[in-house]
Image (cartoon, rainbow, N blue to C red):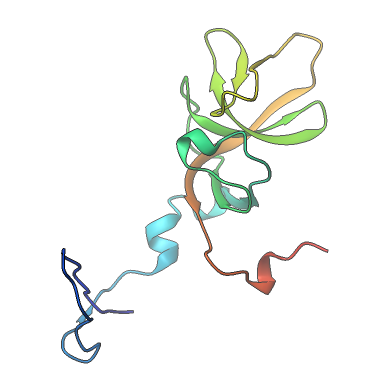
Length: 135
């Protein structure tokens, strides 16, 4: 992958020529974003409940099943048959949102609940891509 360094500063009036300088990185996006390939899946965020931590509707979530879940991690879980992305409060057995418009939910012994993995990265696409269109 070729990386073209572009520096921005106050009073910037133009961009340096892309051919001026570039450097070769021996790193792929897979290596950068995925730590445990055989235990990782990708999901698509829906809704605004996690905006307070920078996860917005339509963001791509990289979820790792190999990572041990810690208190207050961002997780993907199956909660009563619905996949949700929430902050897990293991101490109080709650699923928390990162938006004050959404209340936390207590996980009761009667709920069907399983953690599917820890969200280790989120990616925002600034232009629609057909690969993310769900039909």
